[in-house]
Image: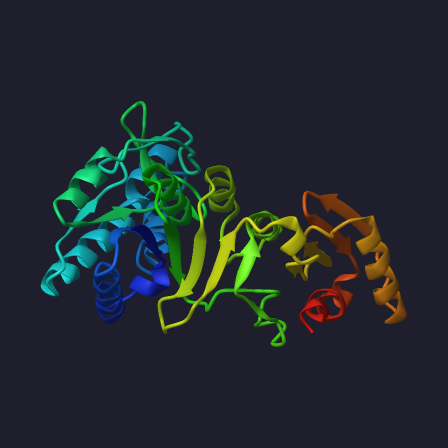
Length: 323
């Protein structure tokens, strides 16, 4: 069994968190071959970007990429040192050492090809490759960054290239909820969500997974699992579900500033819009505009009504499915 794990910045923010992640990796490596992808330590990318602008108000995109990608290299090297201290053989690999080739779009590059030969060689030697997320190398030989959510993208792309059994994304939340539980405490943790529905939520702004990584998972048929690195939990699985077993709605999110409420799922159609309009109208909330996208329906209300609209649609159309 081959597993790709990704750890975000909050999971790596200080020595104690690094030790905890190393212990998680050591435990996982007992039952599977393991490849690890890391983000920069929490806040590191912002510090590096700020330093760049201290020196140059408008740094070139090429040099900014050369600087900000060092944050992931720091994480990878420190994590490997920690693993080795615990007796787990490991090796850090930059994006280009891992064979990640991108286009020349500095700051928001796209992966064009992965040649994972070095990763496979390290696995055959019994070592855990710890790969820097968020980066690759373009045809010109320059370091490129993958933009927002780039470490998620790296992990999913590597899982596809290596034909991994699963890609585990470790973060600071328990999994994927029907809505942001900070806004709606009644939101339900989903044990599984269809990849198409997760993509609709990500495109609408859900921050738990980034759209580019979910697009890659859908294209490569990669099974994802979102887990917390802070405590033991089963997390949420992201995979294709047969339509007959797929819920009508998977969840929703929104934007308080614009008044947007977005409902995601196979049932996000004109009938759902009528249902939502009636539901909100009964509470004195008017839907001013609506837009459809693949597996998604967005409605716009007055910004002051948006929190109430979000709760009404969540409880009346999403949460009600779960009894």
